[in-house]
Image 1 (cartoon, rainbow, N blue to C red):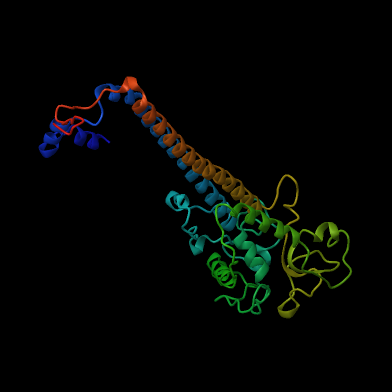
Image 2 (cartoon, rainbow, N blue to C red; image 1 turned 90 degrees about the vertical axis):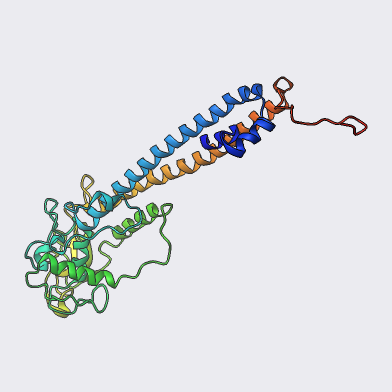
Length: 339
């Protein structure tokens, strides 16, 4: 605007000669009358720009907070990423180093997937990645086909002690078998999709139970078995990993599953589910901020146009503002056409 103003003034060269010959488009009084309206428009523009910067900063913070919770949901409470990774709204979350995968330093699947411990970020129930390994890998050297056929980790025998790197490699093989949905996920629908996914997990509790023997009320009765997720066999023995090969999920009290009993209380909740719900809450806030930005942009454009039209229409039609431009170089003609 300042550069264009200098051109109008004709500060140099041909512009200066043109300005001197024809004068300015607006007379002095018109310029004085227009200054308040233009100043008001400019102030509104500055205020709107400041608001957009504020809303954008809050939106970025919300995205970063959501990604922190998503990282913790997937990889546990100790998951960490750089601020740059977290601020990006499109780049995938960086994976932890294989040695930092949420798995005990040296543990077989019975130990790692035993009754969850809220104070141990490497145990089942805390990170979703650990739970995926627990419900898809057998307590056996082979036959890891519970979730999908063809899952063959390099170190397949999880009945022996395995390292975090071994578990990370198994997780990668399992995820490779997952087929993404066909529906496009956007900021507008991701909150509802996450909520639906959490509800689907709760709805599947005890849906893969197999009755191998009479279930007792104190160990595998309804009050307990509805906390089991994954393939499990009901019987007199309490649920847990056990059996080998084809009998992994046929022996009473055995299974390829997780017992979430310790978490399914009103004041707790499954840790990774809690983080997913926190993600949904942050994204809901982000959706609201996005709509505020859109609404403000629309209102600003409409208000600007209205103010401009009102200002220019009034100042050019008001007789009192009729202070004409330089007429010294404008020739007039009489009714006969004589100059």
